[in-house]
Amino acid sequence: MILSLMLACAPGPDALAIDAMGADAKALEPGTPAAVGVVNLLNDPATTVAMLDDDVPLDRRAANGLIDARDEAPFHTIGQVDAVPYVGPVALDRLAAYAELHGLTPVGADHLGTWDRISFTVEQADAVLALANGASGETLDDEVPLDARAVDAILDARPLSSIPELADLYYVGGTALTAMKAYSPGAASPTETFAADLQTAIESFYSDMGADIAGMGGNSLEQALDAIDASQVSLVEDPEDDPYGYVDEGMTVYSHPDVVFEGSDSVWFGAYDGGELVELYGFE
Image 1 (cartoon, helix red, strand yellow):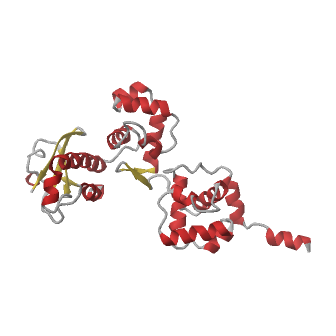
Image 2: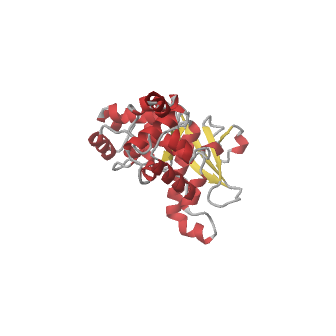
Image 3: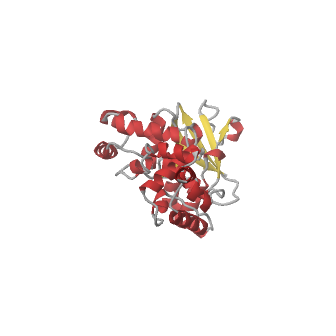
């Protein structure tokens, strides 16, 4: 009788694997693959109370609370998960291990997240963090290059464990993150670089023309920035499609549909020479 009860209560193979992995699970810092994996797992429609209770396994009160919260609104951050009653470090480690075991944790070229409007894959985030934690001050200042105040903030904060932690530092914003991505292995693609440069140009454009744009029924700055998408960037190969003639001069030119006025025929262009931005311009 005792033996049969022990066998009945023994964890299944998945639970044993999860316990073994959970011991070494990454700290669930915001923006880490482990944290994103937990959010992916909980937002998956296939994730049920029974699965969380029996397979992960969690305390049933935590399982109920997580599904109740998810059904009200999808989770966006690991902090929202951690705030659910009866969810603590052990539950988070088990969720992270289960997500990894079932392929829900981003790896390699998978999208990890977007911070200061700069998107990162897991590989890119790892490369940028390695740069932030391992490069000398001279490299960060002179070669990347970063604002000296950003360099000081990075050196003082080492070791950095996530991109959001890096992005929160003094004088580290979208421009610095873009520069670090470009310098690191797994650097930003040319289309991502143009998208980031367009974001900077649109912010400047709105600082001068925002009131006029609003008066003409255009998008807000936030809407315009959200409309910028690297997948919408096109390489301009025909000189006739480049109103400023940079293609004829042998430069690389990219275009993006207008983001200021919905349905507009205007197009934004960026001309690059050897990877350096020469001019960013709009044309109707």
